[in-house]
Amino acid sequence: MKGLPLLKRRCRTALLVFGCTLLPILNAYADIVVGSWNIQRLGHGGQKSYPALAAIASKIDLLAVQEVMTEEGIEKLERQPEQHTGESWSHLASHALGTSSYKEMYALIWRDSTVEYSDGAVVYLDRENHFICEPFSAKFRSKRNGTELALGTVHVVFGKGIKNRVPEIKELANYLEWIKDVYPGTPIVQLGDFNLSPSNAAWAPVKRHAKPLLTEGASTLSAKGHYANLYDNIWVEPNTALVITDAGIIEFPKMVGWNHKKSRKHVSDHAPVYMTLGSAMLSGDAVKVATISSGGIVEGS
Image 1 (cartoon, helix red, strand yellow):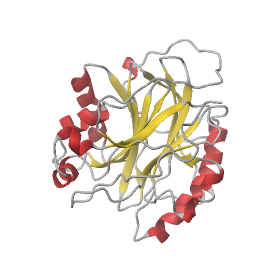
Image 2: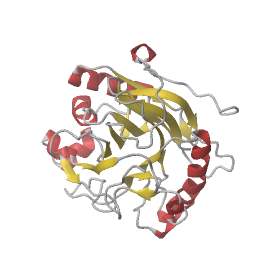
Image 3: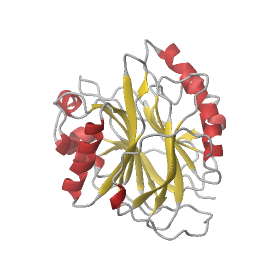
């Protein structure tokens, strides 16, 4: 990790309890729920319903969040699941990334009883400036059996059209090579808001290194009451050691009893995506689609 940039770690370290180091295992059962959510401009304005956010986010043990606008926003998001579940949670975040006119942070938030931060939180060394908001990654450990996994989260630029997104999508192939070097021997998970369907031809370089778990359905909320685009996703290595038993999209408007217009205003215009590892299960029935990409459930090797 020598030479990697420092970043501000904003986490409640007093709540972190590190267990004993376990020997490597072939199958990474992990037994946790991992997810990703673009929480539209989190921390900006006063319209967010943090109780609604907590009810949804607390379904997931380890959650990557995009579009964090302020530190206060992610701190409030952490406190609300604690109140909702009665458990302690922690988070860490990147520094602000973007342009002089627009910046956002990435954050990772987790349930302390099931997950702990391992090491290696770092922003991608994007020397040629391919990304507007460079990906952010960190390594975590399941407290249930010591399995480790590295998460890389990204928010691909929306721009004025697909042509603005394609360069960042293609650069993700190089990012995946880089992240493997940063966390050698650790299962890699790339997740976030990619602003592009996984069926688009621009993904060809990335698909040499990873495959999407979601290939059907949509994760963005239209104000007209339907789901519009499959922009949010979770990508894993084809030969991943992770035992993935389910993956899908949480249809959160039904969870909170709101229509899409109200959900977009007070929660987000994106629904969270998730995967379950090992024996973990997503509680409740608020799942819109649960589809693993071609080849069926991903088996540990």
